[in-house]
Amino acid sequence: MARSTHIVTNQAPPLVGHDVFSADRALLAAIERHVAPDLLDTALDELSAFGRTCGSAQVQEWGVLANQHPPALRTHDRYGHRVDEVEFHPSWHRLLGKGVAAGLTAAWARPAGHVRRAAGFLMWTQVEAGNGCPLSMTHAAVPALRTDPALAAEWEPRLTSMIYDRDQRPAGQKAGALFGMGMTEKQGGSDVRANTTVARPLAEDGTYELTGHKWFCSAPMSDGFLVLAQAPGGLTCFLVPRILDDGVANVFLIQRLKEKLGNRSNASAEVEFDGTWARRVGDEGRGVRTIIEMVAATRIDCVLGSAGLMRQAVAQAIHHCTHREAFGGRLIDKPLMRNVLADLALESEAATTLGLRLAAACDDGGEQERAFLRLAVPAAKYWVTKRCAPVAVEAAECLGGNGYVEESGLPRLVRESPLNSIWEGAGNVQALDVLRALQREPSALDALLQEVGRARGADHRLDAAIKNLLTELADLEGVEARARRVVERLALVLQGALLVRYAPPVVADAFCGSRLGGDWGHAFGTLPHTLDLASVVERARPVS
Image (cartoon, rainbow, N blue to C red; front, top):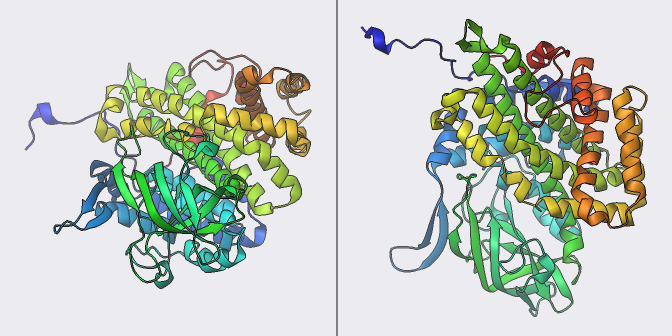
């Protein structure tokens, strides 16, 4: 019998054993909105089943174990032979198998594939964000490979397969394959045109040998990699297989694994090429143009990943406050805590709604939607990923001291939260990309304004924000110094327009009043007290 001092009271139960998809009303509504009626029942059943997987105690434990036992580099075997292998905990492989089986690399091969995958990716990030890197790279490699029909015919069925095959052997002998990417170098970072890796043509047409060093190589145990190198005709995109067709390992020398703030389960490596065999993808000198659609796809995944982290942080905070009592009542019923939770919930729903809208545009594929994505993707990537860290930190504070303890899961979310803002082009890169689109591609701004214009007249604060944005855009003289300000406003107007059209009025009213109308402070929990904050919180409450 337990002693009285060891009886535990007033602690929230674990948030496990629930359907992560069906409990996320904003995500559910987005699927119902963006998936065609003839596919909707299938998509809902599929995502609900995956939601139960994501909410299960076993899968969540795999996420914990994959982070507690990060990958280890083994450069040589016992006899001194170079092997360059990265060893992962079994939980990593279990998670990756589940992610592949759920279609998180198969968007290009299924109807409404991008929206269905986006919802799955957003949920899977809540289980284990590091696992999303190889899933994202594999998904994003497809449009780059399609610039070469022969390569696409060879590799696309492997990349869109729903079978995870972890064995190191030629990709042609596998039921499914994963891709990584190596773009940046130590002397250039985001300035990939400063790359010094050299590609020397070989006798066989389209084949080269590479010599150089990659500062960040994502998912180094993948079956293939897209990399940039300087060919005789300029910066060019190449496919580097991990294992060659004859079964011999390609020259792929892993120098070290990065010690990162978060993303601990995922291996990020420095890689040396020294006579490494590669196939050209696209024409010489057009490497950036070849790989740009891959970059756009990974940036959408940064938005979705941040939306997933925010959703998990908010769900944990609301769940805790639903069960925790203090000062004579439940925390969730306290007006000040309710204000904080509602504010966090608004940020989460706005991110989810925007992320799924980007995925829907990918499924559409029309000229208008492609123009919309050209401006909306870097703006969303800039803003949504930057909102993730403050949301995660505030959510941890909602749990008090419990949220600072590793077992709560919040510290892992906090460590992960800055990643998507830094990777795939940090904030300034995104802001400058928006400026390029504004100055060179007027159709992109037209498409975005048409999207926003569909909500005009529904909320006076949104209308005023649109007018102010147009004034800001009318004068692009010396705009670089205020680029972040412009992109922030653009992203907020887009989020506000989507919420006005699609969210419950109480959510749209709170977002427009605070984010667009200026009735807001500098910290979460400063929403106007006259709003129906209880309804906002209830909408975001996870069902356990």
